[in-house]
Amino acid sequence: MGSLLSLEWKASGPALQNQAAMKLDTRTWALIPLAVAINVAAGSIASYFRLPLYLDSLGTILVASLAGPLAGALTGAVSNTVIPALSNPVWLAFVPVAAVVGALAGWLARRGFLGSPLTAAMAGLLVGVVAATLSAPVSAWLFGGTTGGGTDMVVAVFRAMGMNRLEASIAQGLVTDPLDKMLSFLMVQSILAALPHRLRTSFPQGELLGRMRSFSLPGLRGGGIQHGERRAVALAGSPTGLYRAVDGILHRTAPLTKILLVVASGVAAVTLPAVVAMPDGSRLPAPALPLLATALLGLALIGGVGLELGRTTATLILPLVLSMVAVNGLFGGAASSAWGPFRWSTPAALDALGLGLRVFLILESVILLLLTTRPDLLMGDLERRGLPPRLAYVLLASLNLVPTMLRRAGEILEAQTSRGMPLGQGLSGRARALVPMSGPLLLGAVSEVEERALALEARGFGAENRRTWWSDPPRTAWDPTLQLLLIIIIILLGGRLFL
Image (cartoon, rainbow, N blue to C red; front, side):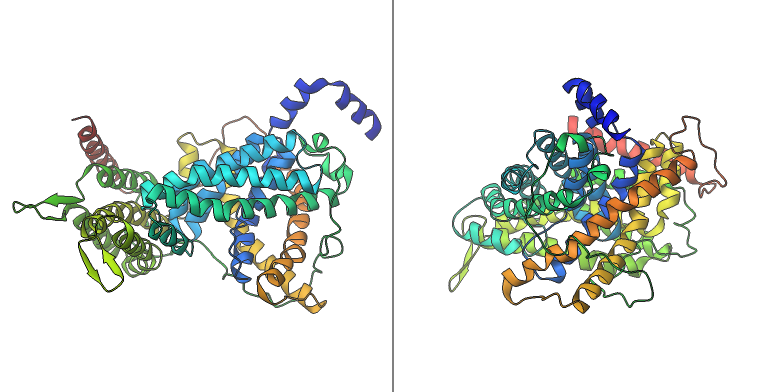
């Protein structure tokens, strides 16, 4: 039977094969949430081993290779939507970049670039260059060339060499992204080569991968974990998301109202002035954006999550704003003052502060939404308003699977360490431990797909009928009035862009 299906596939011609590679079947929908959770867990593994890599596209490349460009783009976009809900809202700005990475990885896989380690490495370098080129304008124009992470020091070095924000962001990306994507492609290629042929070809694009050659890498075979009682090793905590269960007024407000508040905050951040010129020619930060940020904090205090909002913004957003001001003030323009070898540009620092205030207001409103809205209620409300049910499933399942995947990564680390896996010394030694860690994680995820796909089909995942709901989302008597008021504010502020 398998031979007959294989002959039928080969006889179907390239056009039908490409159409199948773009199709999102139930197996693909079941794999995408697992891949998103892998992206988060792999990034935590890289942080645990103190590696200058991201590895946050490992699952995206896996899905793109097995299911095609469309599935890869969707996985990348969902991943950069889920990560902000769990930890850092900054990643929302890079959703288009993640989608392009997934689409390009799927296209390269269809062209046979994952057939051998050499071509996989070439594909990784190409994708890394594209990712660096696309992400640099976002980082430079939206965040002033910084993102609040360790790579800001690399940007500062390039700024000190005389580069502008965009040039420094591109240079930083070209230093880190190609190496990161090359390693990710090599790991995915090795894992796909280790998969049984029947399992690999059960995915839409699996047959197009052909015969695959791989390195003999440790940790891909016999590296799984045994079920049973085991203390998990904490890699990066066990995130349960930013949501805080409090019986507050904001929790009882309709999700749509809070979404409109985020949109209104974003429009205000874009249209209102961040810096004003004084009569004497000096420039100062405009009061509008700080006042709005303070109003959101006051709203959070009324809703019972004021401390959580203050703590989260201080942890995630304040370092970003301070980094923007420091890097641009020290290296961003003509010096206004000097302290020994250091030069400070007040105009450049003031511009960076204004940009930081805009970013702060937008991200603060997003964090407030996530703190006060349960993910399942948010997805359910969006689905009622037209969000495709399959996409709602992927988003919600990804949020639920991330803690499970992190816990599994901790169990794999403990199991591999007990079997004598050397953690190694230095950068190269820690990098060699990635394969025994990530290999079982990826293989286990792919092995789960069939069971998850059958469960989805049994629950009517592919049904076209409109779904019904057991309960209604939160809603108060003043929600319609607030929604109308927010829509009016959005229209009035948006009109400033055309005046």
